[in-house]
Image 1 (spheres, rainbow over the protein chains, first blue to last red):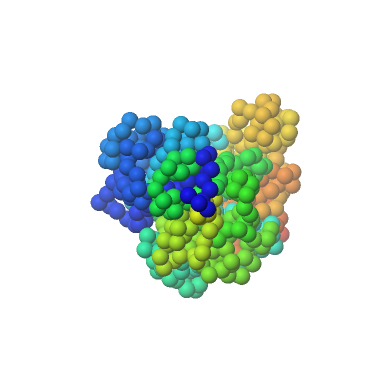
Image 2: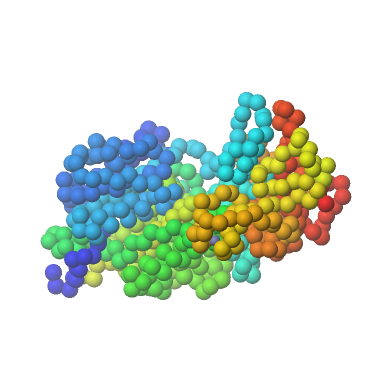
Length: 405
Length: 150
Ligand SMILES: [Zn+2]
C-alpha cells in the first residue's frame, strides 16, 4: 500500500476492546474476559482460529483463566500463558504476546486482562487473628503480632502517599491542593468516557474535603475497586502487510513494549520504589520508539492514587525535573493541555479492575490514535504512551503510534 | 524500656528491635557493599555478596516521608503517622511517629527524630510486646501516654 510502510518485524495492535469498568455481580471474570476477547477479535476483523498465542492476566482469579476463556470463545489448542504481575499484570500479558510475535513463533497474538473484585477494600494489612493471643515470633522479621499500624502503614493509600510525600521532600514541597488537582482532573475527564466506572465531576473543595484516607490522599484521590476486562489483538508486520486495507488503516503501531522490575535502592526494603523502574522503562521505551516525551499527544499512566500520578509526571519525563507540582498547576495534563494525561478518567475514576488495567490503557490510546474516542477524543493524536506499575515491583510501558498511511 | 532488659515477660515486636538498656535496631549488613537488611538474605540484593554481619543502626534520624493514616484495618488505632526515617548512618526505617500530633501542620519533612519504645500490648500469657517508633527530638513531652526509653 503506497505511503504505508509496515516493517515485517514490527508489531501492531489490530483490534482492541474493553468492557465498561463497573460492578458486575452477575458475571465472573471469565464472562467479562470472553466479552472483551470477542470484541477485540471482531474489532480486528479476525477469528479465534487465526490466533497463534493467548496471554491472560489476572491477579485475583483462580488459576487457568486463559483456558477457561478458551472454553467460552474457542478451544483451538494454542499455547496459553496465564500471567500475574501485580498491577502490571495486563501489560505483562501484552508483553508475553508481543514476545511470541517478535520471536517469530506467532503471527497473531491475543492478550486479555480481567478481574472480578467485588466490593473488597484496598486497605489490606489486616491484623492477625488468633483464638488465643500469644506473642511468638514468626515470619521473616520475627514479628510477634501484626505490625501494620505500629511500624508504619502497609495500606496502598498510605504507601503511595509516602511515595508522593518523599517526592515533595526532595523537590521543595508539593501542596495538598496540587495533589488534589490531579484527582479533580481525572474525575472531570471521566465525565466524557462512557466506559468509566464513575462519571461525576467533583469540585476541588469536594475532592479535598472528602474523607481522609491517608494524608494527602482523600477518598476521591484513591482508585475504586471494580470489575472489568480488556483485550488486544496483536499482529506481526509481516502478517499485517497481507491484510485488508481497512485493517491496515486502523492498525496502531506498537513502537515500544517494555517491562522492568525494581532495581536495588537503599530504602526499597521499607518503601516500595515506584520511581526507578518507571524511569528505566520510560527511557528504554523512548529509545526503542525513537520518540521523546515532547512527542506524546496523550498519556495513560498509573494513577492508582493522586500522589502516584503526580510523581509519574516526573518519572516519565513529562515535566521538568522536580516540577511535577507546577506541571499540574499549569494545566498541561488536562485534556486540552499540552500533554493530556488520563483523558479516560484514569484509575481514579475510570476504575481499576487490576488484571484489566494494563490492557485497558492500550485500548484507550488506540481509540485516540484511530480518531475513534468520541467525546473525549484528543484531536489529531498521533503518539501515545501507556504506563502501569505494580508494587513488588513491576512496570510496563508501551508507546503506540498512528499508522503513517 | 530499660526495665525490660532481660525481662522474660517482654518481647520485641520484631526481631530486629533489640531491647535492653539502650534499645536500638539491628540490621544484617553486607560486608562487601554495606547494604543493610532487616530480614535474612541469601545474597545481597545490591551486590550479590553472601557474607553478612550484624550492624547496630543509629537511633537518630530525619523524616524523609510520612503519611497520616485515617483508615486502616479493623483494630488498628487511627489516626497515626507512618514515616520513612533515614537514620544518621543512612539506613531507611519505616515506623510510626509517636509523641507527635497526627496533623500535617505538626509533622515536617526533614524533622529530626529519635527511636523510642513502648508497650504495644500484652498477650494471654502476660507477655508484653514492645514496639518502636520515632519521636520528634525537640518536642519531647513528659506525661504523654507512651513515653518510654531514654
Ligand atoms: Zn552487598
